[in-house]
Image (cartoon, rainbow, N blue to C red; front, side, top):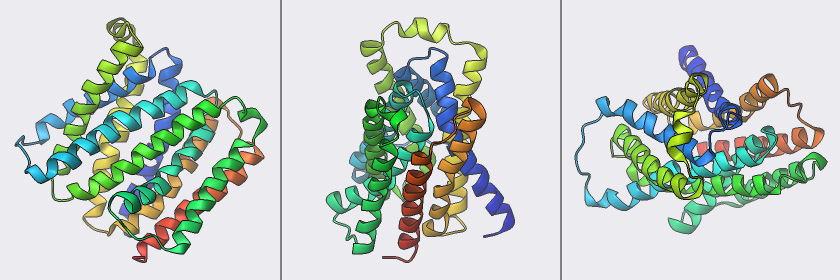
Length: 289
């Protein structure tokens, strides 16, 4: 990989890692979690509008596009924010979010009948063992609900990967914008019914909090993912995917800088098991197995 592209992928992973602590800062400023997901979708949908040509896609794309939009725009953002809002700590949530990779493989096996070799099953098993190990941290005994919400988020992200495989030939700017629109509308309605006082919450968001929301929407969701699509023009997926194992490291480092969270020994050992397993899964994918 060229030096400039290597620097770019590092910046992308830093942006992805920043999503969790930045979202936690927004939630700490009394922005409801579901509403936060809705606003994030709305912002990057509006930002993408000038760059897309709207046309009705072929019928074969309808189901995967809708599935992709609800899985990512609704499921991932909603349960990620709910988990962060429920938990008092951020680092374990970042580590647990890595379960999205094993869930993606399991979903691929179940829904599109992809074959999973023994090595990959073993790595999936060890990644779950790593999460269980993190869960034995005494300070996390009251965070079970947050872990469950994170697991649901990871499952939806796994579904997203399955649906996205059927959208390879569709303009990624259009599919991302459509996902933003679906995510905004669905989460806004859910926020109205379950969180209430939605307009009141929006009008009371402070300027600095809006900047944090824009960071998540523009820099992380839009710029981060668009930059990845740019790299995919030069490198196969398997060449880029192993770098995904770096984003939780950046996320935990930023969490320490922002919240002064010091990872416990359980988190360090469990994190190494999880991140190492995910990295080896990516390498296994790179070999074409």
